[in-house]
Length: 426
Image 1: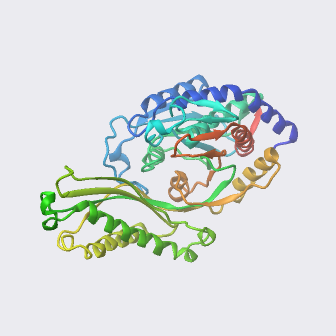
Image 2 (image 1 turned 30 degrees about the vertical axis):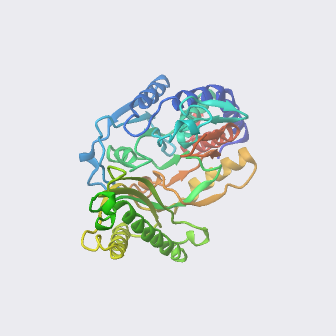
Image 3 (image 1 turned 45 degrees about the horizontal axis):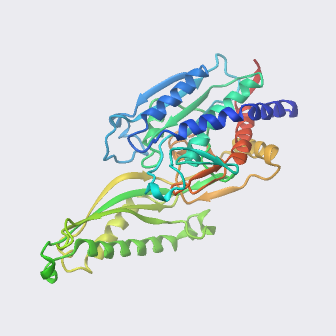
C-alpha cells in the first residue's frame, strides 16, 4: 500500500503534467481515426511511446492469425491498413505485478457536420470541457495511460513490474484489435481500460451481435405498384419483429444478474439502411444493419438462432417474403458479455485510489455497452477493470470530456498503477 507521502507526490506529479496531457489529448483528437483511417493516429501514439523510452511494437492486425481464437468477430472490411501499437516498459527483476493499460484509438463516424457546433476533429476547450469526436470515447483515456506512467517517473520513481500500453483499433466494431494483442502474446496480471465511465467501474458488461438483413422485392413501375413487392416496406415489418424480440429478451433480465435491476438492459438498434434505385420504381432490394445486445452468459449461437427464427416468422406476414425470405449476414461484433469476478484485490486497490482522490466510494455499474475488457477476463484469465472520466454525447454530436474529471481519474489511475505494479526510488 502506498504511504501518504508517496501518494501525494504522485498526485502532484499528475497535476504538473496535466497541461501537456491536455495538449496531447487534443493532438490525438485531431486525427479523424474512423474505421480504416486509424494509421496516422497510431503513428502519433508510437511516437509518443518512443519519446518516453518505451519499447514499441507497431504491427498489422492479421485476420488469419486470429480468426480461430475465441472472441473473434467476423470481418467484411479491408484490414490492409489496420495497425495496433503496444509500448512496453519491462523490468529486469520483477517484484510487483504486471499491468496492461489498454485503450482504443478508433472512433465512430461523425454524422452530418452541420449538426456539430464546431468541426468534430478540431478540438476546443470551453467551460472545463474538451469537445471533439473521440475526446471522451476514448482518446482522453488513452493519453491518460501515458500520463499516469509519466507521473510515476516525474515523481522520481521506477516500476518494479512490467507495464504495457496498448493502443488498439476495432473496439467500436469487432474488438479484433485487442484480440490481436492477446494472440501476439501480451499478457499481464491485470488490465485497466479508461473508457468514459463517469468515474465509476464496470462490474458487468453486455455482449453485442452485429448483423445485416437483406430483403428482396419485385420491381415494377409505380403505376402498377400493386403487382410488385416493395422491399423497403417489407423491411419495416422485419424491423418491427426484431424489436419484439428485443422486448422478449428484456423480459428475461431476472435470469441474468446483475441486470435484473437495470431498467432496459437489451437495446436493439437499426443503425443503417439502404434500398431501392428510383423514386418511380417499386424497390427490389433493401438492406439494414442491426446491433443488438445479449446478456453475459447468453449463448451467442442460441441468440443468433432466435434472431433468424424471428426474421423467418416475420416473413410470413408478407406474401412475397413467404417464399423469398430475407438473408442474414453477420458482419461485425460477435461479443460475449463479461462479469468481473474473483478480482477483490485489484478492485480494492482501485477503490482505495478513487477514494484517495475523490473522497467517495467507487460506484460499480452493470453497463449496457461492451468494451475490450472481455478479451482479458474471458480468454486470458486476467481481471479487467474499466474505469474512466465523465464524458457526454459519445457517439453523438458535440462529444465532450470533463477536464476536471479527467484530472481526477488520471490521479486515481496513477495511484493504482503504482500500488499494483510497485514502485521504488529511481
